[in-house]
Length: 209
Image 1: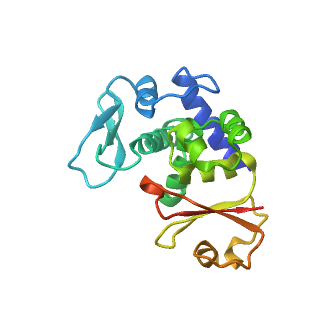
Image 2: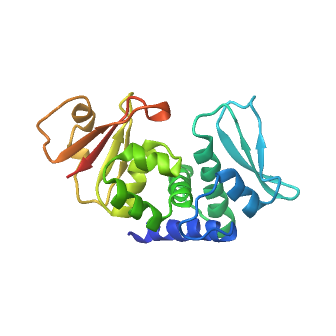
């Protein structure tokens, strides 16, 4: 792993340690938050326009979540990642860099490295099975597999947005990944998996063989 990735893995492990979780324990993100930030760590607001945000309170920190949002579990974990970056790491990157870092930490909190390796050994490239095991979206699992396996993967959304986890060994910028996702066949080195259901509906996962 790159130095930055290792730092995020360490932050995620520290969050899990503070929640009393062993390396392979699975737990709801709301319970992890309560163990780390206190019993009032999560508040719900169905009137908010976004999915979740982190705020300071008189007692410390609180995550406010829209219960109508998709993938609430990951959003709570993302805000825990935001908390770790602010409270434990004093992260000073741009807002975009912080959002990406918080996404990384969230996935590492919910799917720690050794657990995801064992799941991949058990299920292979059956992404839906791994996603079900960790109660995460297939998109998050594809990107997490790339982080842990150290390989090259991307997810193309239905609107053509490209989410990439790369180790720098594959020239994604030179490949028309949207065209490949939509049926282009001449890129034989890319394996393709169609994602289905919920937030993943219509997305295509690409993996360098």
